[in-house]
Length: 128
View 1 (cartoon, rainbow, N blue to C red):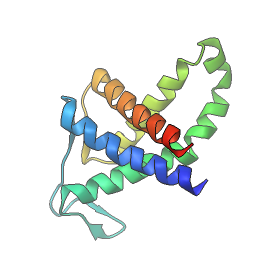
View 2 (cartoon, rainbow, N blue to C red):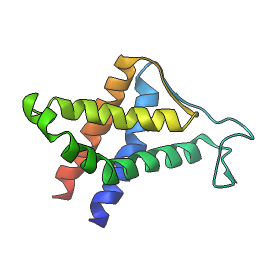
View 3 (cartoon, rainbow, N blue to C red):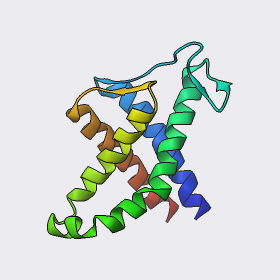
View 4 (cartoon, helix red, strand yellow):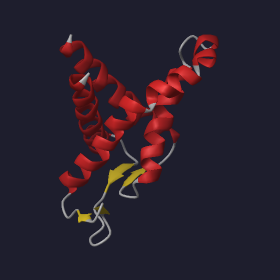
């Protein structure tokens, strides 16, 4: 269980980093004097990546399973495609919560979600 949580956090951090590198419209910035969490100021980009990616991993680990149970009928009716909508919604929520992360447009959100899902899938296979 702890291994799965750590893998989700790694997938979130790595996926966001790859998305900012390769997808136009996805940026992560540091706002000097404003980028802070629990009183800790962040001055470097890697610190913000760790915070935002870890939050994404935690949301994927704790909240996404609840959303999957709640939306089970929709996922059955759409043959699982609604699972992609759930994943996109989780990434969008993290985008809304952190002003440092900017994802412009639905295509950028979709591609970011696919990257994070792919890394999570690969790390899940590696774990097994």
